[in-house]
Image (tube, rainbow, N blue to C red; front, side):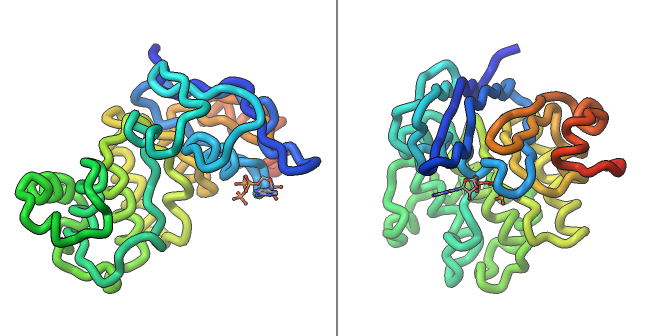
Length: 249
Ligand SMILES: Nc1ncnc2c1ncn2[C@@H]1O[C@H](COP(=O)(O)OP(=O)(O)OP(=O)(O)O)[C@@H](O)[C@H]1O
């Protein structure tokens, strides 16, 4: 079993608070690995350290065998670390197709802002069409982002993250704010990518986590208290006490 990501002894302090406390975790190539934990457990802090937006105080991060612990954020993206664009970073007045085209161009080292440059580049539009084909947004490619539903915007975030051709995709609450139907659609979309791209999925929606994850790591007060399958996590008394409550999940 090869590992796409290996984290060892990762530590981040904010003053007296230890937000990630000696975190050791690996993501196997091709797996969906979920990271769950109560509010304030340190999930965002961990994701931000992986991206390079926050510098760890101690510990190591390896991506596909390379030590990226001290690498700048854009270099990590070049090595295959992808993160979903946030809804707030979408260009509302541009179409779905144009937003995806800009993400493709940005990956190729182009300027994210200079839209004119992208208009004439056939390869960018071919790849954009490929990314959109078969997606839930293919029929909406000429819609303005401002006219999309929240669920459609979350699908667009994901497609734009895939435009960077990640080897490991960090998904920070992809179900947040989605209704039941849209959550089901997002689960299906992620299931369709299973095996193609490795994923570290931070998510509060336990139904989605149990439906998607090969393995789940549970973070409580900055520490991983266990890693296991959905059944192992459901059945672990420490998890039930710390996170799921005493009732059946
Ligand atoms: N920049 C910061 N400065 C000081 N404390 C911080 C900072 N960022 C996070 N924290 C603290 O670190 C702890 C972990 O926060 P973090 O946001 O990583 O948790 P989380 O698991 O992502 O929570 P949630 O599920 O609510 O998003 C919390 O106690 C939080 O208040």
